[in-house]
Image 1: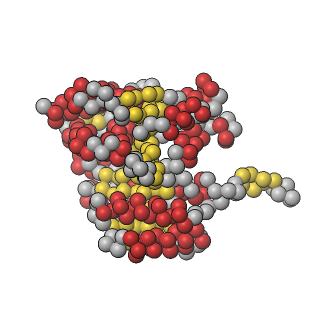
Image 2: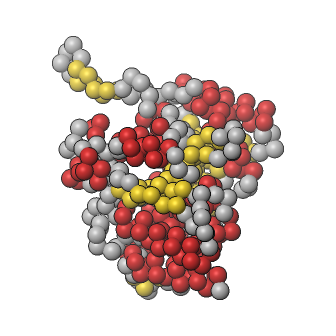
Length: 371
């Protein structure tokens, strides 16, 4: 059947092509078994683009990303590109996508599947049933602030500097997304900053509180300093529902939350732009939280679950296909419940499988659900 579901696939580097390949198998399954067809195109990003074009993202691929409904991203980076100038390193391709697509809202869920509660580095009772959402502002803050650079001072000493800044409108829009997410979950938001030492944090707290009081008084709002939040995530993580924070703190706290689940290989993410005033659609990019893992690339050891769950988020947020997203997520939970694991999440009594074997198990479970 014809499809207007246009998705640009950017596998990237390292294990990216391997884990994206397992998602492509699920896309083919949906075409055959669910009669849902996606119009897939593929491009190069990161080191793969550097090797062919000399830059981490071409203008043509950027234009393609602007004209699809969603981008499915793998990973970028590797040791062979680490000595390149900062401005042309693989990661700059991802940053350009985020910036030009204006993907300001980064959703990073941290959920512990029942079968993996023992895989966490924390005690089982602290993480069993964990389900939190970290909402990271993605296009502002210290990663994009100006001025920035490395300079030589009159004394001859070199100095590196970056600027942390946020406008009212940047804080307002991310706060609204956080409150809207909370209304669909447990109705609680924790806004995180460093208002005790940073002026940008003072403004963040003030604006978030105002948006709450004016537009979302039904949602519980609390404030917490970022360092305390990091401590609380490993002390009592289930106290949180939605955490809303800036680019830098969100980067750090989401990786901390990732390890509560047992492995970075388990966590998906969605990066969303503003709603189109006419269609209500958002530009969107979906990617696993993990990196390119060059040490295991090409060996069939990569865990594809984070990429698969990122695809489930794509179904849910870009195409309003909640039933299909539930099927994919349930398939993951059911496969894990049987003790099938990739090496990164395997215990002593689990069956360790390869990347493609995990894909086989997920497809078999999807077959069972659709029977």
